[in-house]
Length: 143
Image (cartoon, rainbow, N blue to C red; front, side, top):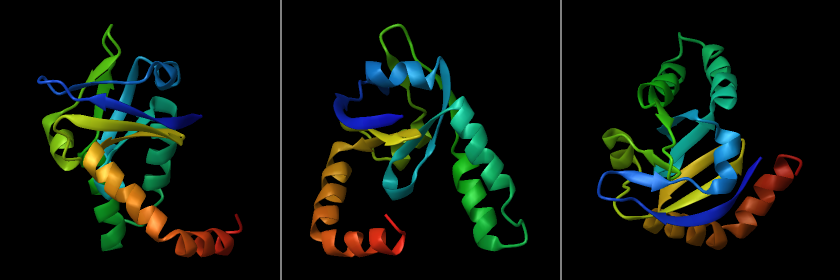
């Protein structure tokens, strides 16, 4: 299970270090795709296959379902970690997540997320401001 928050930088070649504690679980090859909230989702192959199988069950007749599948699959790329623990992020994914220099790598249970530091900080501030609303949502979900 992935958890924790790690500050890193994106180098001039578009590479970012994946924290050592995430590398073993991600494996040598994994999938990076556009994520929600302007971040990137990073899945180990087994989790990507689980996610992909769920996407396959969506009804092709519904426009929102088709859009959802396209969003994740068209933006997906298989990536490798180099000997220094870095991954080269494709340009379209860096652009989607607005990654330029400072980034945050976050463990989120079955996936890793990569955020620009500015967007991550804005997200956290919004989460704090809406804590009562989030607490109600958690109660509604039975958590």
